[in-house]
Length: 433
Image (cartoon, rainbow, N blue to C red; front, side):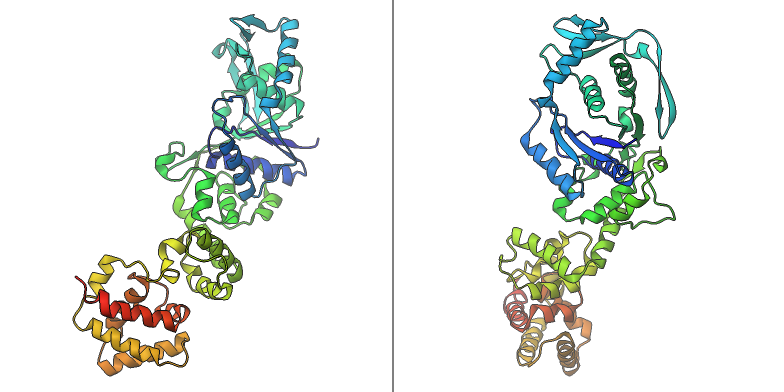
């Protein structure tokens, strides 16, 4: 049997993290089994369907590294197929017209289906005495369209969230009524937040787009989602997507709800960033910085690689470059008022900064070692503890009380910027207030 799976989102909102994990599990399973991954867009609700959300689905799947083998198929373009199947059920007497709709009465019985993760599940049909197949406006209901499409697309395995378990017996009844073979069902656990409720906006970002925009690396994000409910074994936490495909076993997906731990995702993403080649990281940072207007399109790539090298170990997400290290790209930097008040507005600091500026402006070389030697020599001459001057210099140059190693920062900023910023701090900031 050739494996055929489908991912069937509705373009009525941005792609949720839970839906992304479902798409990935389908994709991993299909690729592991040498099967086919199908994309189906369930857009029968034309009032709520939005082209922007459809575009978001495409962009999110591309970010996740998912490329459909077939599709996209659109339910809105398959109305004739649903109507044809409804007519068959009407002619066989299994369905009837009722108030303009086509309804399928369900006789009292037990429906049993096999769930790959949970075993046999039995449901009494008295819980749903009849099923609407076609609404009075001529559009199909979710369960009916889903069964028709899955049957015609020869879907062998339906992998979806366990919030769909209640739909499955209704669909099984329809498969049987239309004479189609049942697929294998696997209902994967929901993703929950810290409150153990279904992941929601209260827990922070919930859409793939939000994580993409903040600057999570695709491989890290895919790695993390894959481990929500599945494990490669051996307590491994960092597993590249290509290796996940080789190891993925649908039967090893856990039944318990998967807890979304934001701190763990941040840690994992930081590990991917630390291991990324500096030129690759610089290119990604450059794309962000140009888009944010912090760098010109024709920026100095070699210089940005120097920046990337000293910030790489401090980034949790790519967006930290503009949140915590924008001082590299702003002239003058944005100054934190608390840092200025604490470190720059002290007796004699303005004079010390002015004198240090003069010393640094005379240096023939401006690498980190030369700058450090000059600054420490200046402190010794002035009878200053190094930290008494380092902190004010850091604030003068970065606007912040915390930064990457100061002498590395100074070397990357370059002599002209350092001199200019020290002059600004000595003449303006140290005397303000």
